[in-house]
Length: 71
Image 1 (cartoon, helix red, strand yellow):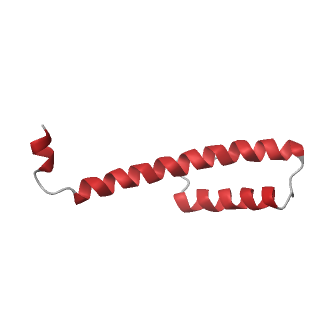
Image 2 (cartoon, rainbow, N blue to C red):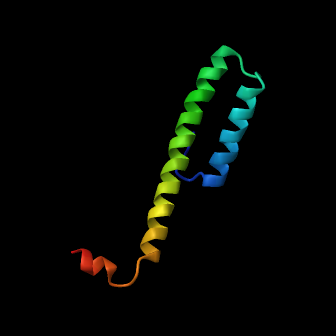
């Protein structure tokens, strides 16, 4: 489900919905497995987005010329 055009916020909202349904025992055993697989994909998507954002922020905060001195 975690399509590339889906935003981080949308993915987190869907993940929260799945968690709430699991915690409230709303899912039968057949739907539980399906929802857990979707949740795994959403977690990976969100984690990847966070890692990418973190790397971009760190790059922006590096002092100028720091990249050149690493070479």
